Amino acid sequence: MKKSFRPWWLAAAALLAITVSAWWAYSEIGRNPGELMDYADRRLLGHPRLQWLTQPFETFLRARLDAPPLAERAQRPFLVPTPPPRRGPTEIRTPDAVGAGVKVWRVSPQGNLPRISNAAALAKDGDVIEIEAGDYHGDVALWMQKRLTIRGVNGAARIFADGRNAEDKAIWVIREGDFDISNIDFIGARAGDGNGAGIRFEGGSLRLRDCLFWDNQMGLLSSNMVQGAKVTVLVEGSEFAYSHVNGRWGHNLYVGWLDQLTVSHSYFHHAGVGHLLKSRARVNNILYNRLTDESGGRASYELEFPNGGIARVIGNVIQQQRDTEHSVIVAFGAEGYKWPLNQLLMGNNTLVNDHPHGGTFFRVAPGADKVVLANNLFVGPGRTQPQGATLVHNNPRLDWDSFVMPARHDYRLRNPPADLSWSRLADEELNAVLQPHAQYVHPRKLVPLAGPPLWVGAEQRTSP
Image 1 (cartoon, rainbow, N blue to C red):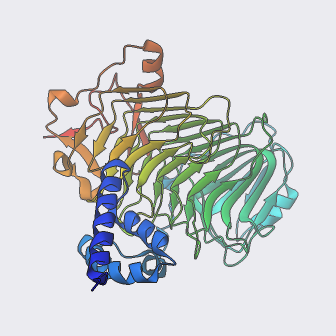
Image 2 (tube, helix red, strand yellow):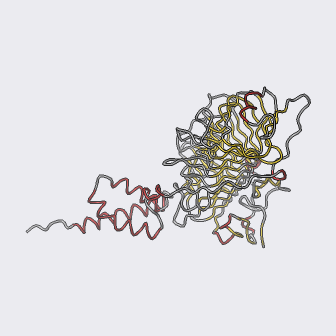
Image 3 (cartoon, rainbow, N blue to C red):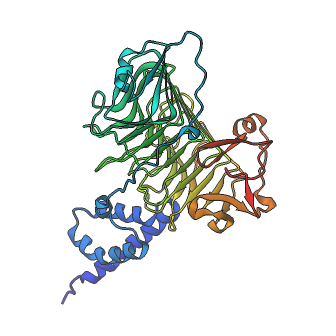
């Protein structure tokens, strides 16, 4: 009599196949176990018998590894705390002097111009708008000027969207102008398409200094520009946090196809499913920042350049927490290279993977013209996945106990040994590009270095 094929053989074969595949993927692809099981769930759709046979093993693994399935994670609320206290006169950037003959408009709840939107309608090119410190509710605006300075005075000016937006886009929409904005907080933007931003930037040049973006669907969002247009964004000393959209991604900062993005001594944290910083710009200078998703964050990539370009990533602390929605910390070229020259140049960054079961510090898609990794510090488990012409120089790996207080993102080295010393590249041209000249000091400070850096990584201070 012919023996029947017993279900336990099928279960054993499925279990063995899944185990071998998962181990290979874990060791070679750089995914964490939760992502691998999510992938397995998708592959098993339409195969109810295999799902039934493998479910107990997967349930056991998810419980042991604290890796809940995607559907369960999607039901978790993304908790947004109240914004930090409004900054006072000593906590903001000192306003620049106003040139002779420049018209200054003063917005104040107690003055003749009580609303920001009134100033947006009245101001002419070249004017200065000063917004008295305070809370402004539902005071959204469209800015059509070609050149304008807008700044909070006597403390930060906080704008709460309170359900309103300009053009169903943002708290402020800036269109084709040269704008300098400082000491303004943008809070709670929502829009019907899920892209409600603190600022929607639609061409020209934008300089942001000492601004806060909190609890928006998108923090700063730019439109795609015509290739060749000299559209630039400069961000200094600003904070981007808690961007989120129900059911999809919310990026803290997202710029489209523009000429140049520069971000310096700024603080990015706690994004909901989206990225801390995402840029499609041709040239990207990401210098001396803190990008740390931290406890309660749900970000995917911490830093992404989906279309390549030239990316100089120097002196940043970049941390991914264990509840991430994607195991890659820095991604380059994932959506295809758009620009004629595509280079990822990373020097003196501290990259931290707080997931205990795998991950990828950076991933470069095939086709990059140049990848240079010099004097970076990798913390925790994970792989690096460069592609193309790659130069790797002095990138040690450490565990968390080598730092003063990593649980609070204090990555000062404890009594660093000589083998963690900074090392000059033989190529002096590359060395000039990658050598840091300052460092980030929390919160949002830029501290110049007296000379060449002493140590690998972003933090040049040490503790005995």
